[in-house]
Amino acid sequence: MKKLVLALMLWSSAAMADGFKIGLGGHCPVGYVMAGKQVFGDPKFASEYQGTTYYNSSAEAKAMFDKDPEKYVEAVKYKGFCATGLAMGKQLESDPGIFSKVDGKIYFFSSKEAKAMFDKDSKKYIGMADKEWNKLGKK
Image (cartoon, rainbow, N blue to C red):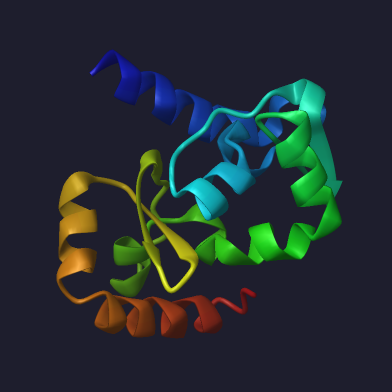
């Protein structure tokens, strides 16, 4: 439970850490996309992309991100909002440890229940969430 509370605090508070906008709550984008797992980033391996700072987990991860940042940023859908919540018309913050990888894209969730719903019919939820995201004028 302590890990969950800490992760949620990091996820929500990291958005403005050090006066900069921190992407993915300080977690390594390369870890999610390439390894399919949650990996904490390190500020000493920070990369900037489109006004957002991303913390990578190592010099190698930073080099991969810097070579093609769009690959990693675009792979995270809905800027990390809960995919199931979005499909239901709600913008819910996600837990960075609860996610699914579908067709190379990363979808985050606010709870294990939200993930379970999504996983039962991911195509349906992706379609619904995409429609809601487009209504919001998001990319």
